[in-house]
Image 1 (cartoon, rainbow, N blue to C red):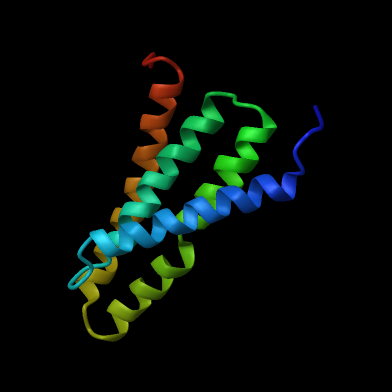
Image 2 (cartoon, one colour):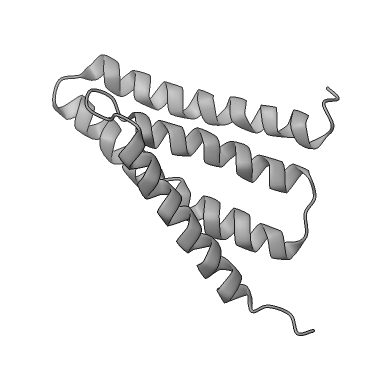
Length: 121
């Protein structure tokens, strides 16, 4: 059996991640705070952490890590929304957005490490 072209793996994962990102945007209320971006960044950090810490092979890393997580998570939206909040005078919300995204992603990575290592600390 021939190996799958890495570009196909990344592209397929990217398509899945982009569709999931769209669905989260439709399902999560974003009116007063960029909650959908926070959701995808924290969930994506967890998923990427699990596949990385679990030691899956290159194929799964390309499909899930680079492809799906790469298109599902969004640093550009996070940055834009934080600056937009700041510029519109919602400084507390801007600081909260930056803090919760960064701390949430870090905690998600920690949780992924615990899950991937079988719960051992």
